[in-house]
Amino acid sequence: MKINLAVFFGGRSVEHEISVISAVQAMHAANHEKYNVIPIYITKAGEMYTGEVLFDINNYKDLNALLENCQAAQIAKQENEVVLITRGKGLFKSSKTTPIHMAFPVVHGTNCEDGSIQGFFELIGLPYIGCDVTSSAIGMDKSVFKSVMQSYNLPVLPGFTFDSRSFVLQKDEIIGKIAEQFSFPVIVKPANLGSSVGISKANDPQQLEEAITLAANFAEKILVEPAITNLREINCSVLGDNEEYEASVCEEPIMKDEILSYKDKYLSGNSTKGMESLSRKLPADLPDEKSEEIKQLAINVFKAIGGSGLARIDFLLDTADNDKVYVNEINTIPGSLAFYLWKESGLPFDKLIDKLVDLGYKRSRRKANLMYSIETNILATSNFGIKGNKLKG
Image (cartoon, rainbow, N blue to C red):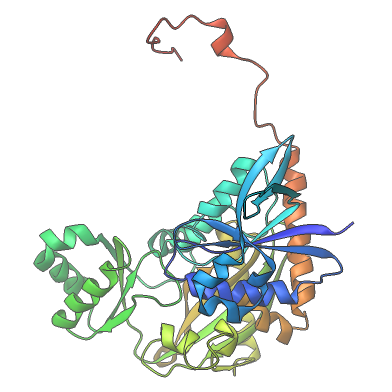
């Protein structure tokens, strides 16, 4: 029997379009002899749609026409089974119910990749691929992620985090604290976005103020770090769960500016190929021992956040300090699912998806052995009065 594999993508995120590209790639790569691939597109307003037209990337050029040819969709739990409910159009429209066996979230950014959609799957008891709520949330918040890395003694750059609202009231004080803690240049980032959105480099206090203002357009929480002047960026992917891990080959993205930008990642080549189109050295030109060091660090990062499924870990190399390695960030649902790294490692995209599905079912089987309720009902045995009384305990 085929597995009904529901691919969730889009969402209320500034990385919406990147998610669409990644999802379409994954839907075409999946083995359709094993899976009934069900596209579930989440609009920027948070509405769900499904339909065959969602498989074609060219159809997204006109969203109004796209949605006209889709069916509105709902996810529900019915008789201990999670189902997709679609409603037809016209006077005699009827609903159709399709069971979902496994959810495949291919979403990027806030309100999606940050544990939001994973929490929804947990709530309704739907098995899903990838990191869980906690590891997804840690991975999305760069400040929290940095703290977790420090607690595991993994190498990260120091950081200064503050709320963008406080910057409006205490601008001079915050800029002063940053200048006191770090020498210029510095890197300013929205703390909970990916795809290099809102990131910029500041060489002086005036540029710092401008960089913070830019980042504040995308997030309330801002992170500032010292910039590495002599920089190489190296990425590595990890596949596995809490029992087994495997690291991919390393890549070196080719930067056209001082930092790897959104333009470098998604607009420098074929915009319909997402991260696959990024200019890169693959595998990265590294000594064997440095490559192995980065691979082991990637696994340690994945383990530290409690990762499952797939992630891409991004590293910074300081070439002026003997190629010292720093953990930069983790992407728990990386662009294009980092399939190009695994293809180079000898694992084709369709087999990568098979492994992710297997890992999703493995976690689901483990969770099925846990207790989530106690067979008692204190509401049936207690008298709370009209307004209720304070519970003791």
